[in-house]
Length: 343
Image (cartoon, rainbow, N blue to C red; front, side, top):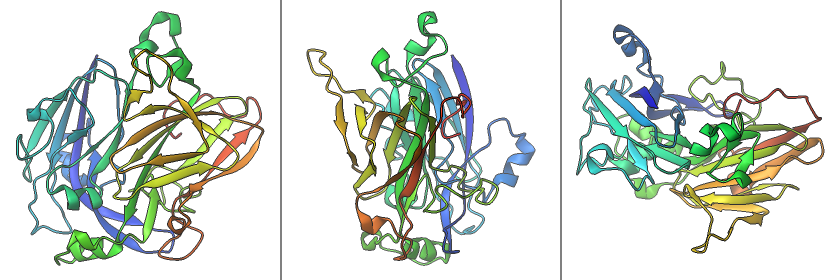
């Protein structure tokens, strides 16, 4: 199946629960936007970037348009899309500027890729990556298994080409941190040494608690994804963890163990095909890594979902904040079937 997408590379601002605002670089969805109107999306970068949702074997054509940085018109950086973790990508379309093509301001480039393996991935700009990743040029990728297109499994959802990875609801959990000093200096045309990186905010899907569970999309238009995980009792839930920060994290749902079935978009199986999936109370995840974890929703109630590194559950030192969210379990039939991730 062919899919055509278009992302704009630009800048914007995100807001934290303590009222502070922070300058970012990032991506905005402009698929289907008329050519004369794409420039109205300058300065509207989202954190994280728009979801790329594809199927195994699809032909993906993603056009990146560099819309420039309204806050920093002096900064004419090029940008790229790097398909992090796709082993089959050829250099021309892999977004590493030293060996392929980067996109200058006002220009377009169409990337092609054909995902061969299902799982959870990520993309990011690979131009001056230490700065552009921390500034927010990151986004999630889901590759759905061919099993879902088998008529024998019509209407059912799976993490991999394996019936044991079936689920009812899925949630992307995108982890990263934010160092306000670096963002402020970049906004004000000052140099910053990224080896001085000291984050003060720890984010789930671009938000810090309590905005992770309470903030409405219209209040945070540049941070459209909440991390309020909802399910009916007995439903199977897939958590797609992605870490594109610079620190390791350890996430736990208090009272709900999870079964880790995938790591870096690879189904956990041994050389003999044995199942290596494992039950864990805590999900450890390193920078640049993805983890797919399943759990079955237990008795109705609210379950805390948080980072076991308690110093990451703050907003600029004030608790509670940071990487805290909730898992809400409802009675049978309360929630309608899920139509898209995190909704």
